[in-house]
Image (tube, one colour):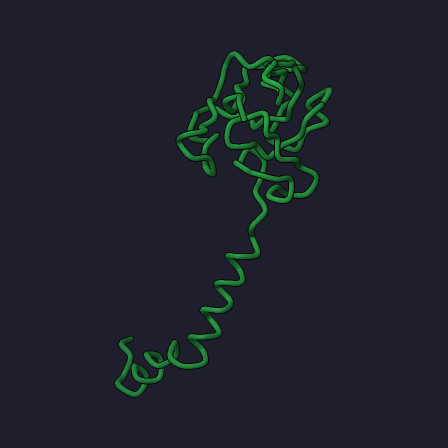
Length: 143
């Protein structure tokens, strides 16, 4: 049923004045409060990452994640414990275990990562608990 002229006037004015300002402020608050990055995203400091995740600076662009897992059960859902050789801050390299996202395609790894620090969906990742046909999102080393 089409809107009549008085109905159109009433609805067309809805987003003017105080309602428009309130909607805009609510939207801004919603966007600015969601600032914590999920696992696999880039970061600069631990505070950029969600909950217990750390900003792993041994990876290019930083990587929100968890270090020193022993088994997949130590990692959040949709992630796995992967052994990786990563660069140290002193220029050397060491092998550590990390919780990395499980993937089937590269684009699943880079929702929140710029092209300069894209992760690869690697079938050669070393899964601590066995590959089981899985691939992992492995970020480039060298923070």
